[in-house]
Amino acid sequence: MLQVTPAASEYLNTMLDRVKAPSEAAVRIVAKPDGGGLTTTIDEERDGDQHFDCKGRTVLLLDSQVATALSEQTLDIEQESQRLVLA
Image (cartoon, rainbow, N blue to C red):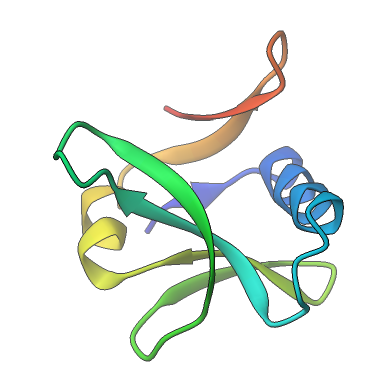
């Protein structure tokens, strides 16, 4: 299972607040259409999604394919650039 650090959870929560996302929306990690890596989008939870919460709010969603691909990874924040990184 993907590990999400507390710093990454807080970052995602703040990002959702900043874009004024509805309370049922969260950040979803998805494969880029051209197959060249991953990107994020704002979406709602679907059946079978893996979800991660912060302060009672779902902040991150993964479908089963992405969850499997990231199962040995950790989502964190790069301190210098303040962006999400997988390690």
